[in-house]
Structure formats: C-alpha cells, structure tokens
Image 1 (tube, helix red, strand yellow):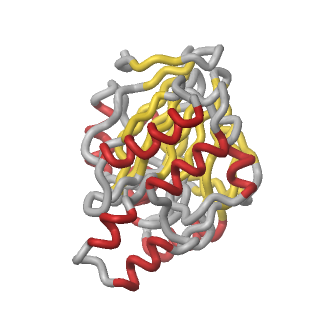
Image 2: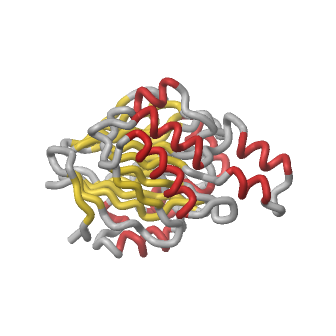
Image 3: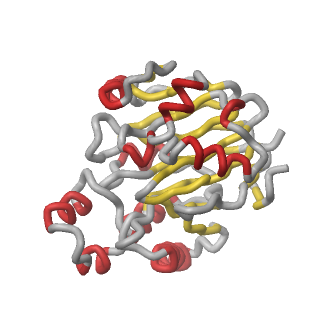
Length: 272
C-alpha cells in the first residue's frame, strides 16, 4: 500500500496532518475542533474512529484543541513526552490514553517509526518528528525560533517536509495590533521562523531526495502565501534545486493528498 499524506490544515488557528500506511492511520497534532477534523478527514474518505494514534508536538491550543473528544471519548492513543502530557492534563480534565516517549527517542506506531527531536519554542518540551515509512521519510518542523544543528541533522534525510514559515518580517514589524512584547516573543529564539529564516533552514537540508516542502503555520495577519512561496522558491532556484515542489499549506482547507512511492518519487492525487 502506498503512503498517503494530507495536510488537513496549518496556520496560527490550527494545525493537523494525516498520514496513512498499510498498518497505521496517524494524526500529527490535533489543533482543530473534533468537528472540523472529522469534516476534513471526510473529504478524503476517512473518519476519526479508524485512527491508530495521534502525535503531539507540544501543548499549545492550535495543536491540541481536538484531543478531548478524539482521545478521551474515542480512546485513540496520544503520543507525547512527559512534560507535554502534564501540560495537557493541567488543562484537560478527561483522562486520555497517553503513550509517553522520551524526547530524542524513536518508537513505532504500526509499520511507522517515529523519530523525535527537541525544538526551541516557548512550550514545555516541544518536539519535531521525522516519520519513517517504507516509501520515504516525512518531516514535521513547526513552531520553532531557530534551527539547531541537531534539527538540521534530523530532517536532512526527509523526502517531504512541513516547515514553518510563520511571518514576513516587514509585515510583522508594521503590524499595529500586536504589542512590541509579542513581536519580540515571535522574533525570539523560542518564537517562530520567518519566511527568510525558513528558507535558510531549507538551504541547509536541500538534497536530491527532498522533493516536496509544505510551508506551514502561516500567520493570517503577518504573512501571505505568495510571499512565503516566493521567498522559498527564490532560495531554491538560487541553489538549483528546481526539483523541489513548494506548496503553502492553507488554514481553512486540506491540501491535496500526496502519495509517496517506493522510490521516493511521488504525486498528488485524491485519496480513493
């Protein structure tokens, strides 16, 4: 069976992705309401009841909003580290079937191996993931202020990468609704990647095997899909990496499902 990836939505108001293999149906984060997650899964013919696990990067609401129903009521295992579990338990009263991992470790969910690594962000113990499947490797790198050498090393082998492009520096600086203290937090080493910073990360990991980059977690006020895309595309063109498909993930609608094949060449298609 081919490996399917659908970015169900990504942005400041919610983040969630779906991965399907022969033995696993996994959500990476659950930052929308359960109703929204169900609706978006339905567009690809899937339902929450068939999930085998939910991977959580950190405890912020735009990554865990749907957990109460998905995990507590449907008893879907939640994979996170200890500090993230404690932070979730402090805000959600319903008991959940947690599967706690140690940051930096690997674990299996069906036929998928999940590699975890620490990222710098203003959460208790935020992590990124590199998902190893029989058809290729999928990286999730969102909500971080900068990329450490360890992060670059971990995602360098990705064939597909969801990479944060949170804000355009000029739009953030000109934004009149955010106080300077909030802007400082966003720009800090535990904040969020700008379009330019994300392009620098991509430059360090670009390879012949990296064939798709999703631009994720775009701010609705301080970024535009066309700005994020242009910044990344210009950097990749400068490197001669024209084989990399760049796509800005939307907040409101799922991206077309992406299929990885055994040679790590892939194509967009509807999940039938």
